[in-house]
Image 1 (cartoon, rainbow, N blue to C red):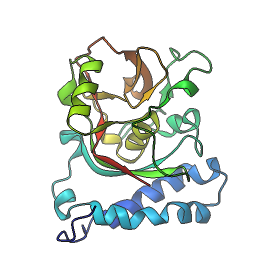
Image 2: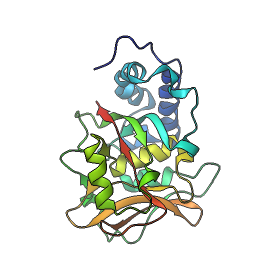
Image 3: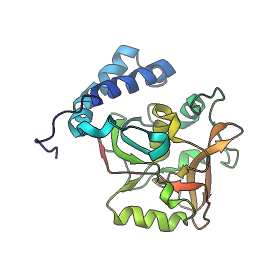
Length: 227
């Protein structure tokens, strides 16, 4: 529930509109089988919630590359925009090389990495908002399974593959060397945990074992989802 004592954040509306423009420019309307106008209509109802839930000070000292924190992210689900099509639309900040899916995903396996029961996005229209997003570099060097347990204890939720791609799409500067992140909200029933990191000067979607720590890989999480 939104605290009525908070005034709408002056930067939130502009940021929401920027994220919509980004998706339109990258061709998300076509991926979802819609015109740009119909796509804008699809996501428009989320704008008021983004503004209402975002504190006035959220963008006063906004440095996601340094802090790894983002107030909100507009997410398009894979039912509208397949991961295999959206990952190549990502780049590093200032980079030109497209993101890619690592070959360690055997053919057809990526489709099996889906949201778990607790991370399944709300709503039925394929778009939602993710609030209070953290890159989670405090978990660099931690075993992913332990990191997921800590995230749950804090009442937070790990990001899914689609949400990680959305974060990278809207805020590419959040993915930096030695501060990459796992996406523990999508699993396929085994010990593999999807993750985003940098390879060959481009973003890569790969996976790591649940019990193997990496000094450069944290655990991304969020405070809430809304549709």
